[in-house]
Image (cartoon, rainbow, N blue to C red):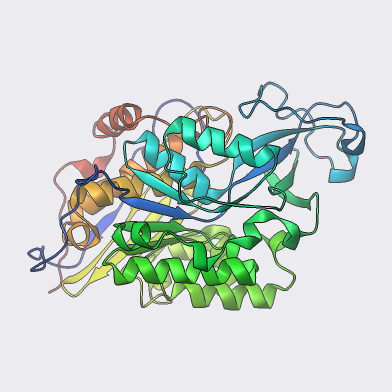
Length: 410
């Protein structure tokens, strides 16, 4: 979720609710943000890696003797080499990331007990990522360590600062995140989780793909829900046709789908304007997912959520803040929404309450916006108090917080 502009927030939204509020389903699972038994409420499954961002001119990559070991590096050189191709960039700065890892740290900072299921290399970068996750408080007992390098991604910058994924230091299949083993999954933790959050980059590896599907099945059999954040990056795949097939098949396991404007165009050849104006046109393509979230960067976010009682849909504009870096904003958005899912008592309860659903998306947007105000995906993630403050402030200028007429359809 990208935001830009001044420090004051945007106003205006539209919202419609086409059903009467139903009662909670009998026997529905009542959840809380904190774990009642001390376990993990959310399990994030997927990759952790380093993004190497082009920065100041200096040594060529092959001439660098050692990389910075500080996982929260200086940021003042972040945008010095805009507009250069990878082979022209003289030096790079490593940033810890990977969407599932970003969501795990963001949720932990919001106070949600979260485990991270991944395969990390037995190398220096793997140790750095493990140290960072532990320092923040993520449960890393579920991480598999493998004898393969931790992934690095090289990210070029356009003249206006947008990112272009340029490739890897090695062949993609040689990295540790391609080696997640289904036989070594933490079955008890997965079957006891309320939510699993995962992406789609791991689907490019047959072994990790099998583990992701097995993990999702364990969560669903245990009564939990699966959120899939679509993340298509052509540098991970040898064939775009295979990528589309595997992603679409995996989405059949999702209860909640978050999808961006770029991913919509790739999967469904759909423009973001159509999706924002009519998010249910996206939900129509995802009949197994009762909740669909569409994000379109600075254009805002929309949602379409359905249950046996009816359908709720709406739009939330971005919070306009002073932007330092948009990396990880979408992952923070996901974390904010999951926080509100838990606070509401689960997906079924949230879908039954149009106001709470709208608040969940606004809260998610606030979490994503605050992540843009500092450089770095993980370092910039806000505390619960910071998000709540911006969320409460928004009630003064988002017009949907007042009384509004709602259409209903039984």
